[in-house]
Image 1 (spheres, rainbow, N blue to C red):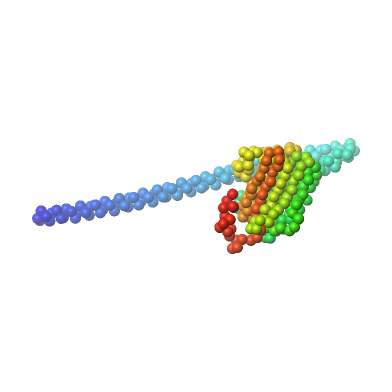
Image 2: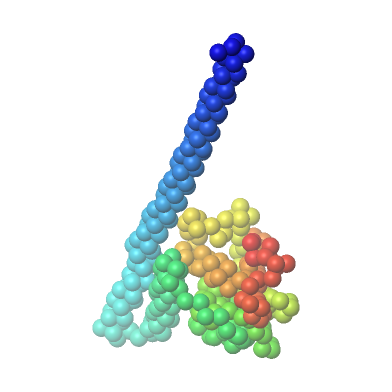
Length: 300
């Protein structure tokens, strides 16, 4: 073989070798990318499982906290009040019984609200809470809520009113709207001093109906407003007559408003009062989809 032939033969072998090396490098690089992607997917899946585990632990701790602290209060109240009743009957001193009856009614309302909130919260955590939106008359629901809390309002000499004069509709789940108003009115009464005012009003804003719960209470400090609906925020605040917070109330309000394609805002000044603005769709969205131009509102 001539020298030129040997050179050509060598170049061919070298080219083949380069191609083989390039293919090996390509396969190795592709394998490395696939391995890295698998590792990344595994890390993401592990992170998701850790988040679920953290959420499960937080849920369990919240549940036991409610059982051990919040439920004990009204149950102990019933025990104490029953002792007072028995003592009054034995001593034939009946003058205190009307006041005791008022306390029993308040304790029963507290316990009923707590159990309702606990059940709703537990079902919501499991994702099994039914949502059945329909056309609702806010005037009717607000009057029902006011009727429930009249005894509590009278005991603190608070003016509790529904100022919705004409029928006004929203498209939402009835139980959710009732729970929202019930919890916000309860909070308003709790943080409003004797002789104050609490009112429910509503305004038609086109796509949304704005429901306002306004009180003349102690207000909310600025540093607490930003974390008002944060799930991990568990520090309790006491009412103007020593009422204990329900713990779950505002979390349920926030979650139920979002569940019904609404959003919530709060205005508050210390020692002046607080207003919660709840905006809920006034009618069913077409194809049950939120219009694109309104999506930024629901991200609040």
